Image (tube, rainbow, N blue to C red; front, side):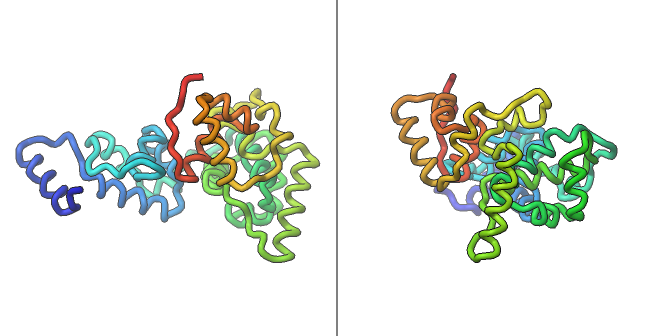
Length: 258
């Protein structure tokens, strides 16, 4: 495998020859790692850059993707144009609160308390009631909740002492009593639409299982020739949730036609 120094030299020669359609993959990766360290999720990077999620994952070399030595200059330009200031460059005004409310409810269903979520969002806990009940929410809050959801949707809250275990149990019970669906019940494409509903059998499969165990079962089902929708239905989650779970577990399975 060529070294970083060799790749940079080859790019230098290409530019001297007037070939400028490719960019250094390491430079783009370093930039994305800086954005992630500043609190931006890979999904948020893809949204701000106007590229697909898979483009960002591929450029990062995440999961089973091999880090590319080079990438198309146009894609690199879009990603390099994303700056941390975009976290603050958020439209003013009010937006529909449906997606924001569902994301917070889903995190509570995972065991995150409203106090913890409010602290991570930098708001007072009393404001959580307003966000969870009113039909609209500030656009800045909607973006912050979306980024927090991308970070925590499959990250279990701390439960290594008596107090934290009580908090997790209380939050999950609170969500269950109100019928709040967990992240696995929602597809990213549907969660913001008021008319959308969670996957039909999410209650049956809402009991938490180790993510590695679920990923292993999914891979076995794929090995039997099942499609993404069929595997997701068997596991009681959406195809989007399944894809995100496999990515976080370092498993790359190409999407199959339904």
